[in-house]
Image 1 (cartoon, rainbow, N blue to C red):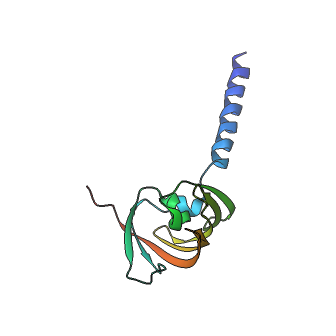
Image 2: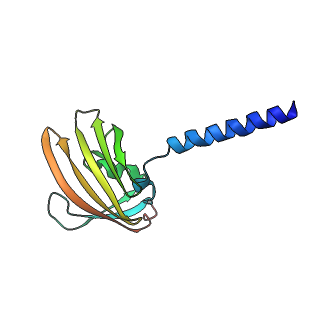
Length: 133
């Protein structure tokens, strides 16, 4: 009886590991660490912008980062992913994130924000930790 119980525990653990593997977030974003990120190529054409990102998943929806959105991963490889998202206020977009290194990403995004179309390519580079408040 003890042997059967041990086998069931091992099988349950293996099944749990499979579920954890299936639920993992996309690799291109999870390898990017939270912290201070610098963005170049923003649509206003100005100087580079720096932002503290606590959650790097917002990189997939930069145009709508302050909004509540649902995301669907369309495709992914170890270094790139394509995400489709829809926001509560009616905005939506599609973003391709390509990991050049864990500290450098290329973000190509397009969609509708505030009833206007957007389409741009951004270089994102992690430049350090977020400043302490």
